[in-house]
Every structure is written in C-alpha cells, then in structure tokens.
Image (tube, rainbow, N blue to C red; front, side, top):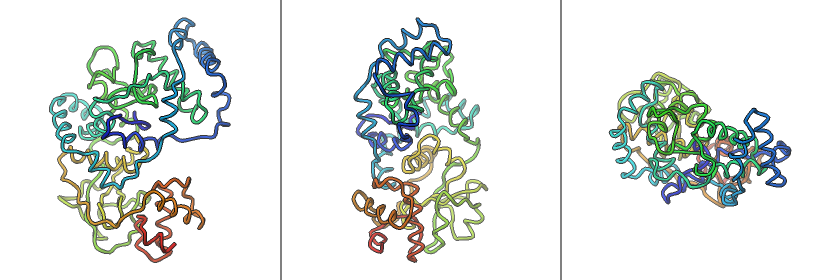
Length: 402
C-alpha cells in the first residue's frame, strides 16, 4: 500500500511528498548489524539469511543476482517533505472533475468487482476508488523503480532497515509463488507495487486472486488490486456498514477546544452544542470527532471510527482527509463548503511559530514548517492560554501574540 510514495504525474506529485510522513526515521544504531557496510557484502548477508530460512541456494542466487544499489531511490527518500497546502487548496488540486468522472466510470466498468468487495469486506466502492485515484491515477502511473533494487537499497541504508529488510524476504516468497520478478517488477521508490500500491508483505498478508487466474497481480489486474486493497482495509479495522466522514455546520460560537481527533462525542452531544449535518441527518449514532482542517471558519466535518482507519493507510492528515472526502464525493456527496477561513501560516512563518512554541515547552517535534499533530496541539494550548478561539489553526494573529 502506498503509505510511503505516490504516483509520478504532475497532478499526483504532491502525494509523493505527503505520503512520506508515514516513513519513520530511526537512529542508525538501532539496526547497525542489519544495514550499511559494503553493498555486495550486504547482499551476501541477505543471501545467507534467506538460505537459513530454508530457501534453496539456487533460488536465492537467481533472486538476488541482479540486485544493485539505486541512487535515485536514495535521492527520492532524502527529498521527502510535505506539500504544504491547506486542505481546501490540496483537495481542489487533487479532485478534478476529470478524476471524479473517471472514478464514476470505473465504478460502472467494474461493478461486479465492487459488489464483491462490499459483500466480502464491507468496503464501499468510493473508498477504494479514491485510493486508486490518488495512488496511481487509476493504474496509469504505478512507478518505474525496480522494486527489488528499491527494497535492497533502502534496507542497506541505515534510516529504516527494520521496515525494508523484511520486505526483501516477502518479495522472495512472492518470487517462489510466481508473483514477483526481480528483474521486471517495478513500482514506487519505496517498494510498493500495483494499482493501489502495496508492499510485498502486504501482498502476502492481504493479496486476493480476484480474477481467478491463480496469481495475485496488482499491476495488471484491477480485480486483484481492488479486492486486495479492500481486504487490507478490513485487516486495518474497517467496519462494514459504518460511515467514515460527514460534513457539518457549526454555530458561530462554541467551545472550539472540543474539535480535534482527541475528542470523540456522540451525534447527540454534538447536536447539543449546535453542530448539525450540512445536509440530511446524522450518518450514524457513533462516537465522532469534529475536524476543522482550517480552523473554525473553514470546512467542517465529523470523522467516525472508520475515519481513523485511513491513518493506517497514510499518516498525513491532509491526505487522509482529502481521500475520505473524495470517497464521499464518489458516493454522491456535494462539494464541501470551504467557508471563509483565516489565512494560515506556511514556510518560514510556520517554522518561526514552531520555534516559539518549542521555547514555551511544547513538543512540536522537528522544526520543519509542517502543521502536524504536535504543532496543532501546541497551537490549541497557546490559543487557550491567550484567550483566543482554540481551534488549533495557526494564524498571523497567534504568531504575533507569541
């Protein structure tokens, strides 16, 4: 699954950056014995370990004989960042009318597959269509990095060997099953494969032979890719028959500190505060969080338990909210009300804010200009201290007061 990298078209390049948030960076000392050193010696070590697992020497040799270090993979990894757009701008860029219409056409084209997906895994068509669109533009751009080289390169690198080294042996297992070719299998720079971009271990755990040909081929079979993605979502905790996101209207004044994923209230409780669905009725009587991606004057949603599953797919808040909203659009929801949010901070201003928050004892993580969970929590705390509406949206007013 592409929790890590995205498609390569101009319209999808933002996702290649946002998705990188899901890749934790650990200190090299944690896995020093499992990474680094002479590259050929490292590959020989992989071969020894594979033989110890029970793979015969010939199979291991054929699998690893062409493995090489890929500098382009390392360059892509080092270039990770976040496409610093607010939710409204990001969503409008990613969700074009063409992408929406293509998604609806794909739903009709693969109606039987989506019906099976809903029946077997409880995942509505819009959810997978949105991921399919954002990951690879419905399969059109799946990445052209040699997957084995990408995995071996990243495992040899000492940033996250504990993540990528096991993927090499998962790919070896797929090779013995006839579902991976070390010479020709390609995908994203971080080793993900296919239309919805899954890592080798994800394919082993959740791969589905949707077209009945005896293989799981996520690059060429829409049935395999979509059903595998749905199975993976269910494995992550997706609950059948439950909503994920709903747009709401807000009163002019409320206790804004209740907004955020940390607070979960029932629809009745939100209703008592003046929150109401923008259209229709509440989607479900389930605990829900109030989501204000651009503060109290911007778009407003409630996220139900299934919304949290999105973070298992990708850890970027903006990506997750956009994907969940696009799933709603593909399911018939109207365009969201963008409201009139106050201008946010970006670049140097965000870094300046983070430095001031850190100086006041808040844990904002790296000073990187990214509005992540730690920075949002710190913003909310300072807004409360200063008597400002505590909606966790950083503005020039807050920066000035700090």
